[in-house]
Amino acid sequence: MVLSTMYPKYSVRKGGKTVIMEQKLLKRISHLLLDTARCVGCGICVDACPKEAISLGMVGASIRGAASGEAPISVDPAVCSYCGVCTILCPFDALLVEVDGEPSLPILEQEGFPEYDFTAEISEEKCVRCTSCHEACPHDAIVRDVPVYEGEVEGGVQRQTALNGDVTFQVDTEKCTICGICGTLCPALTVARDPFYPGTMTPTG
Image (cartoon, rainbow, N blue to C red; front, side):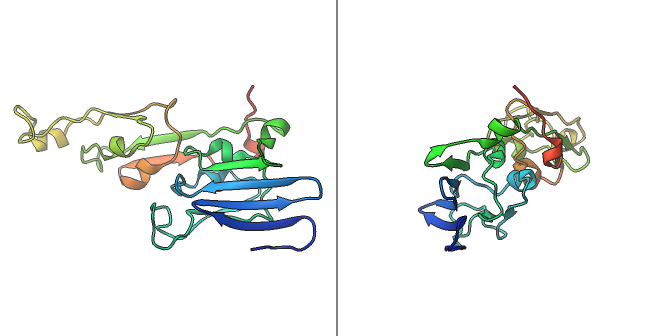
């Protein structure tokens, strides 16, 4: 699909499981590559994009192998600035910016490295003492201390006793990528990310 016949030119095409957004200038060609096999539709890039060029795709598109064939996110190649903020923040390495065929992060050269502030909380009333959040975390960032119920092993704790016990829930902030999968899976978990705008960027290095 070609969106313009004059410079700059914009286009979107698919190559296997990769969606390629292109901006073609007279002396510069920029690409944003989306690996649909890696993308889970967590929405971090949507929040982070300073141009609001990214939107979430159809419901269910993040399910790998979805029959619809839709990508979990959609990027407007004419609005995208190809700055690389989404590439830096994507916890699944699903996005890549290329300039003239070479990987590039223009945002690092121009404005600094963006960071997120986040909180992860668990409701003791809603938690049923399972380990789904720990098992679902793609980076093993959640630590749970859940007693084994009786019947599962010899000497296991009675279910009611376990349900009335304190909840142990810890997040390793060095491993956590703020993808929010745990919060999406479990109603007892709340993962909050501060909205990202150019004015809230935190330069490092």
